[in-house]
Length: 123
Image 1 (cartoon, rainbow, N blue to C red):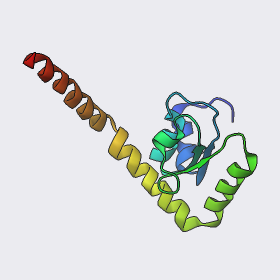
Image 2: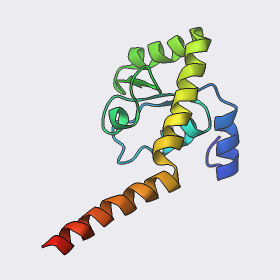
Image 3: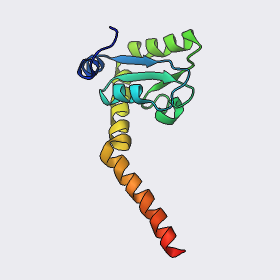
Image 4: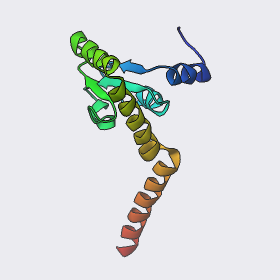
């Protein structure tokens, strides 16, 4: 499709069953997170930020990005097991909403910085 606007991207993700991100390196997993919040089951890299974002088999699947067979097996597994695919997609969406939604992250940041301020006051 080439470059598309954000709304088109989100529409495609929302209508997709599986999204695959076999990256060798990711500094932060924004693309897989967008797919997960759209309710799409994700196959992501087993390297870099993959294991930080996804618990394999629970809210996504992890595959070695250099192993085409591993990637294909994960995609086929989801395709052939539609109930599991839906469960993973649902769990992935919940994980993003519960852990990465802006109000959740902001609250964690405020709590953290308040603890630093409180420690400094005690010195």
